[in-house]
Length: 414
Image 1 (cartoon, rainbow, N blue to C red):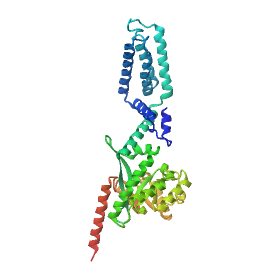
Image 2 (spheres, rainbow, N blue to C red; image 1 turned 135 degrees about the vertical axis):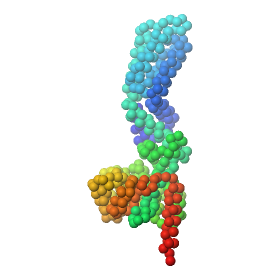
Image 3 (cartoon, helix red, strand yellow; image 1 turned 60 degrees about the vertical axis):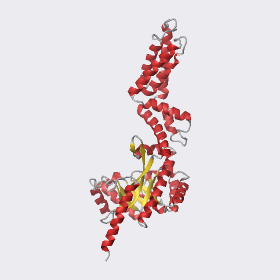
Image 4 (cartoon, rainbow, N blue to C red; image 1 turned 90 degrees about the vertical axis):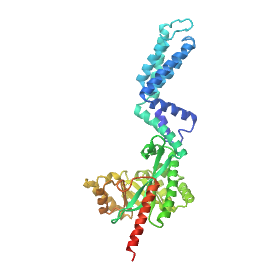
């Protein structure tokens, strides 16, 4: 069952669309994800409550003993066959020797009656585990995905998701200049605090929520690009927005972007879309058409995480792109691994040959930065240079950069 619920997330159907689906998600999520001691306590409470209900209704002769099956099903979903078996045996004792046939007369039940009922309880427990129980990691993962989807939808509606920016630097020459920023989604959770994209982006990408989330990030990035344009004037600056494979194949993508540009009045040259090579190589024809349409609007196209997928520069050159982002997995090894350094150097050289810019991401040390500058890398991004943060941090950095430029100009003036 949990596999089917997980697979439902891969379709366009909203798993939280109907009350039946929402209710089943809550029940199964509470059951499978409950802590062990809590689940044991709930099981015992269900068994005790079932005994009291049947006893007060007149005993085994007057009231059906099926109410004990609720506890058995709960234990089976939470603990598997062993939990169902133990609970079924406990229910057999409670509904047999400890439950008279008639509470008015105190008559005891015959052995074959409660023994038969016990076999029925065991069969129910095994049946439940056969059809509902899976390995705990898989079950918990599937149900956690459903729960995360529901929470993410609420967070989007409540405005709890925000956009942070990580600056991008031009590393030519002695001075490092901020020439762009990557827009990154963050979730301001009321209890967990700031939640990184690795926790919720995979869930959004498996559902239609990625379109709503992507549009939120795009619109906020476009508005912020407009504000920064007023600050830097005609200076070089671009804001990067990530596109997933699901978004890239969306026939309404270009219309969404066009509407966003019209609403925010931002110069489309201030925006670029970052797409992983794996994403646009899934369907090269659709990807090429979609990217070409975005270029017609005036937006830039960047290849993200280059080197981690299954394409190459020989394939990439067929797409209307501007910049190649070299994956951090290569960058972090260039200091001590000659092969990694050779790969990065070759990528930079071929990138320039094809007329693109090379951007190295994930820079964490000064040694890495110096090697990349020596290789002729154009742009850089990483924790060494600037951490991701709210838009105000990038604004402050741009203002400081502009002030420094003015002081330098005044110093050189006669």
